[in-house]
Image (cartoon, rainbow, N blue to C red; front, top):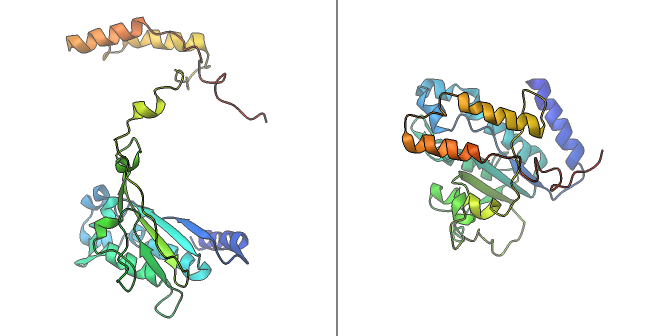
Length: 245
């Protein structure tokens, strides 16, 4: 582990040496903060899980290299995560404001979905949930929710930070890909070709689920498979531009 951290430090140094204003985008692993992971651990196990404290390596990067801006993302469970009766998220935000201690370079922390409190000493928001970004509210065809923090190094003058603009309508997967040409899936356990693909599809009628006990579902399967043909664009080679090696 020590060698991997040294390797990471050397890599970052080679990339950013001599550069004062750069952006760090990343996050500590989320397993320790996920609600599923927490449900399987006692508080003792939770606090002694090294993954729970991996965010300190993120702090070290901020302390050592002082990027102008950082973006840190994690799962919603980080908002409710607690240890020794205290809020883990509150501690992380506090540490992010001063990653090297109170006498080091500091950062103001901002939300992408709620305007920061300009009267606050740290330009933060009042509620932890203000840092939660719900992707479906911003034109993304997916109900993925993530906590995203924007950190700006103290001394950088920004009058007003824009926030994400919510979409006027909910965007579906169909809205995004409905006008794309139909392409087929690939075969991974045999030579992939249109003929082999059609044969593989025909063999699916022998699977137990094909003859579902539910009459409507069974009719849907049989109707769909009776119309299976190789799509005109096959797997997309004629449609998607590919760079020649």
